[in-house]
Image (cartoon, rainbow, N blue to C red; front, side, top):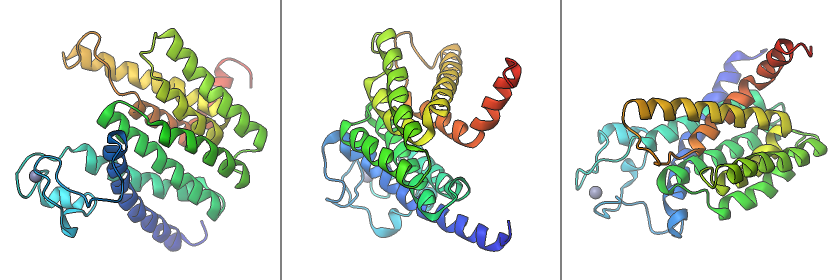
Length: 258
Ligand SMILES: [Zn+2]
């Protein structure tokens, strides 16, 4: 890179934006499944309804200062909130290296924001609301093609393949894999194209099985109990976006196709 200082400065700025948008993703994740407005009323404690002042709303920092508890009622604030903010920051910064143009960087950042919202709604309410996933499918199909992240046949085939493979698992699993996960994959397919989408889903299933097996082994998961799957999808998508080409190449070499 020719200007390392500028590069790191932009990445740091994107990281800061990611923290703020991650905080907003938390609000969306909590309120959308409850059919509440995402703008009003102002953020409040979910236990005692105490309205949060500005310094209680700083991403990650407030949680650390308050040591994970509400200032008024001292009830715990789940650690997943600051973690999701932090991860959104990292993902926004990563968009800087993924995109080749400013437009692509913006689209990747918005895509990660969408994935983090879905992680949030799945953790909070075990759903990915249609009001998020269906508009996202259209937005990311257009954005992916218009900013040349994917050529249009790849984006369109990716969208169809992405939905179809998860829908198939939804049918085969008798509904254990949610329909919301399939709808989430419409946008993932449009952004990643068919091959990387497929890889991301295989990775998500591997991660999910390993963690599920681990939880069951330590008695943290009962038979028939469901685990939210979108966090594993997010992990699979991240791995596919960052290391997918290398993994596919390795696979081709292993099976003797390259
Ligand atoms: Zn409270």
